[in-house]
Amino acid sequence: MTMEHGEDCCVKVAVHARPLIGDEKLQGCKDCVTVVPGKPQVQIGTHSFTFDHVYGSSGTPSTAMFDECVAPLVEGLFQGYNATVLAYGQTGSGKTYTMGTACKEGTHVGIIPRAMAALFDKIEKLKNQVDFQLRVSFIEILKEEVRDLLDPATVTAGKVENGNGHTGKLSVPGKPPVQIREGSNGVITLSGSTEVHVTTQKEMTTCLEQGSLSRATGSTNMNNQSSHAIFTITLEQMRKADPIMASDGMPIEEMNDDYLCAKLHLVDLAGSERAKRTGSDGLRFKEVFTSTEDFWPLATS
Ligand SMILES: Nc1ncnc2c1ncn2[C@@H]1O[C@H](COP(=O)(O)OP(=O)(O)OP(=O)(O)O)[C@@H](O)[C@H]1O
Image 1 (cartoon, rainbow, N blue to C red):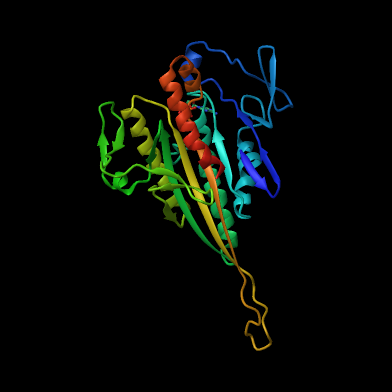
Image 2 (image 1 turned 135 degrees about the horizontal axis):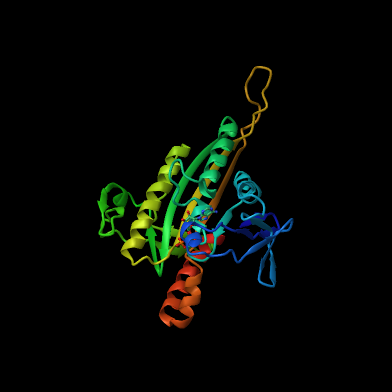
């Protein structure tokens, strides 16, 4: 998790330890990670590892994670600070669960839905003094390819049932792939990715749900290869300073318009063990690291 405040630049690392789930309990698996009481520390065998925060499995309750780690980043957006939240971990470790990337109404609420709620709460409070514009994009990076999960052609093409019983959406062929470009000013842009203007939390949630469905279909068709998913919220603000009024009620100063634009990237990374597995397989290794490089400029832009 990153946040830049003037000259300060910090990266914070939080661990979210998930409990054993159904199958693991049935197979008699045992927790191999112990949380050290009262410290942001975990122990694996005789080794101890200290982080900025440890949540879950008897560490700080998971519900505190959003308030301590992500809420300040959402606040920072309103001051024009970009931020990135990355979920990193082995396949099945709970990245998607923690991020809430595949959120469904009535299920567990992860970081992304909570960030949306906090964003719209703040907008509601400030809407009389500030004009807001919100856009979202949702992309997936697999090998060298960037897929646009909000591509309207995909979204309107309808639902299909694939051979594995998963429901997905038809992809319309012919659309050029999304390109990552660096401008002369060093700004990284995604050429050809869809940016959806949203005005309500419901519209933003719909984008997340539609994109997640596209992603799930993609991975089924691609032999379950893990991919990076990046949900980006762009917040533009036009502040309007209160004009100083003359006695006749006319403003005696020009209104000062103060424009701010900031992005929050919420990233659900591919399973981290893929890099290890590819250590014995040159081609896979190259694939994983190609997509990590593709992803990196986005995370820091
Ligand atoms: N904190 C948690 N509490 C309870 N169940 C959890 C928790 N975290 C994850 N799970 C469950 O563990 C399983 C795996 O989680 P999830 O799909 O989020 O893993 P992942 O790291 O995103 O995997 P992949 O890399 O394959 O996408 C899911 O069934 C999920 O519901």
